[in-house]
Image (cartoon, rainbow, N blue to C red; front, side, top):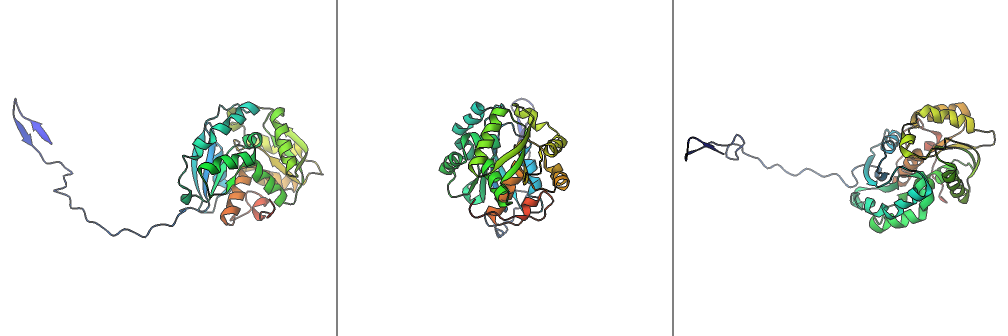
Length: 277
C-alpha cells in the first residue's frame, strides 16, 4: 500500500496482513467424510413460494443425521390444475440445481396436488433424466405407500384445496387402491393463504372428517403447518394420521435405511414400507 505525501511523492507502508509477516504452516489434510455426509440426504424440489415444507420435514427427521438440500421450481401460488400442471416443464431445471447424485440418497418433489396433476410416473421420468441413479419420491405416491403400509384402504381426508383439485387427488388415490369415504375441505386456491393457516384448524377439520368406517386420516398439502397437532389427532381418534410431508419423510427414511427415532410424529414411523408399494 502506498501513501501520497505531497505533490509527486509517495511513501510505502507494509500491509497489516502482509505474507512477509505471517508464516502459514501447511497441515495434513484430514480424513474426509464419506458421501453422502447426511443420512438421509434429501434433495428437495420446493415450490418457489414455499415456506412450510422444509421446516415440517425437519420435524419428522428429528433425531436423525438428516440433511435437506433444496432447490426451487417457479410457481405462481395459484393452486388450480392449469398452474399446477405448468410446473411439468420447469421441474428439470430445478432438479439440475441440486448437488451431485453422490451427495444425496433420495430426491423429493414438493407439491401434493402438483404431483397428482402431473403424475408420479411423469415426474420420476423428468427428474431422472437430469438426476439419474437415485430413488425419487413424490407426495402423492408417498401418501399412497404410507396408507397402504398402515394396512388402510378407506380413509377420511382433509385438504385446503378447491373441489376441482380435490377430485384429482381423490381419483389418483383411488387408482392406488385408497378410497376417500369422508372428507372436509377449506376450498382455498391461494397457496400463500394455505401457508398461513394455523395447525389447529386442521385438527378441527380432521375430527370433523373422521367417521367410524375410516381406517386412517389423511391431511393433504406440503405447504401447511400441521406437525404440532398430529399426536392430538391420533389420540382423539385412535387412528393413524398421514400428512404429505410426514409421508415424504417416512418414505425417505425407509429408502435410506434409517430407523425413525420415535413415534412422536405419528404411528406411521413405526411401519415398514410394503414391498409392493
